[in-house]
Image 1 (cartoon, rainbow, N blue to C red):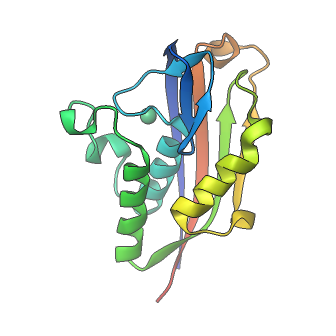
Image 2: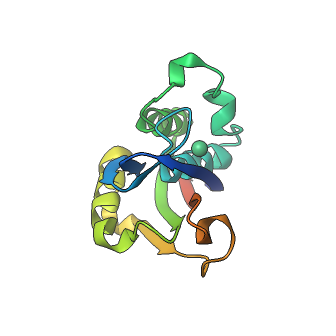
Amino acid sequence: MFRVGTGFDVHAFEPGNKIYLCGVEIPFDKSLAGHSDADVALHALTDAILGALALGDIGLHFPDTDEKWKKADSVIFLNWSIKRAKQRNFRLSNIDLTIICEKPKINSFREQLIGNLSKICSLESDKINVKATTTERLGFTGREEGIASICSVLLYETS
Ligand code: MG
């Protein structure tokens, strides 16, 4: 038995000096605005897993109106979704994640992002793909107003 899921997320830039992507702190000349740590990549991945499990979305389980999740480490959300999958005997088969922005350039720390996802998800790095693309200067990502991320996952049943 297989289950497929997709996730999409966007966060706007705000003044700051670092962003979080895939749980990795990246020095940058802006930050991402959000109730949590605004890790747009982990939010898309978490939503993809919740999608595969037919468990709604991240906002349903971790509402941004709840003070508990203010500045929260998004790894908490991802770990929770993986735990829910395990409870139903599902494991991650692979992750295909795309980060959409003009800057920062993802290539220079791609391996670090994959390494961290591999650690959090207990999944071999050859089953994790992190892609980066721009929108050719079009739209909000093209104007460097924020970062978008889209993710697909496949889950397989272990029993
Ligand atoms: Mg988000």
